[in-house]
Image 1 (cartoon, one colour):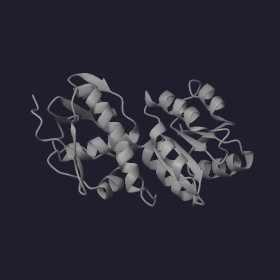
Image 2 (spheres, one colour):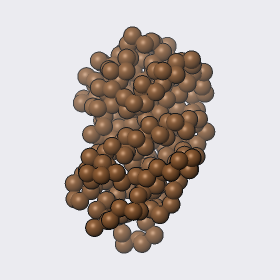
Image 3 (cartoon, rainbow, N blue to C red):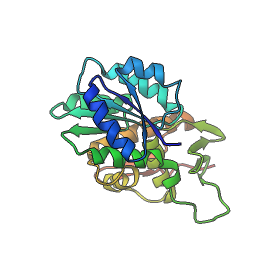
Image 4 (tube, rainbow, N blue to C red):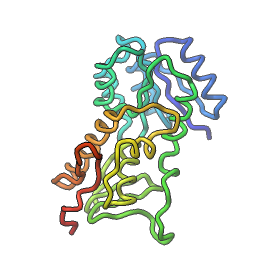
Length: 237
């Protein structure tokens, strides 16, 4: 079965163009005319990712997009958005709402294809543990299972989006390292897609909050001008 992309756009011509490109690349597409329509369709179909056309601010406001992100979070469905240039305020509002990646127009459609391929196969693309007998990684009470796209702390599940999952997996591959923002971009986003370093900070903040809620303390360490890593000073018992 081809991965299904829910394309939310008020512009029928945009949907026809992007759906044509995506279907050539092996995806199936499902149209939604606005965010309300997208929310209605999400429970009805098995969706691999959501692509939002934010060219019309009235049809996809940040609060409506936030509801879409909440609806997709439980199933780790990535949300992508297309935004006209010159709208930096909305760019960061969308990131804070939970959008995984934003494309600034004008952009080449191949960037969307690359990103969807990477996000749709996020779990399968993670490197396997060194010990073939293992099924995942552990760091104290924190466990990550790549094939199941599952994270647990002290036996309790933590729900993470695809980008946050990949950021955590990167750190758990080498828990003693501090990773730069550039390293996280290479690890968590598709190639040939431009990602601002500040975008990493937004996703890392989202990951930090999820882990703090589960562990009752900060698990991620920030090193100014260097990057992020797991906090090795925490007693891991």
